[in-house]
Length: 128
Image (cartoon, rainbow, N blue to C red; front, side):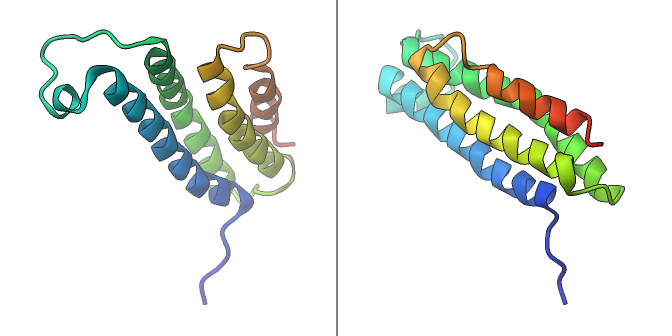
């Protein structure tokens, strides 16, 4: 009989969906600014994008920069049987903060963007 996923591994699975959401938002905003023909081609020449597409690219880059650490911490918790508790809470907080980050960053909100992630990062890094 298959065993249930730990809370952290559940969040990890949902984070893959979030990865593709980031990628879709970035691609859609870039296509809107540069056109489908340009984006389907080799993109040898650089075409400038608008503010929203630029923000979507930077938000996706930020996700890709922090994602490996989340994956590593999640797998470390799961492989050492230390899942649940504050580690699970931190994983869900990280996930919620990453979801909240997208519209906040796209809208250009400055002060509150990082605050949810600060609390989530602290909880995942210190699971005891």
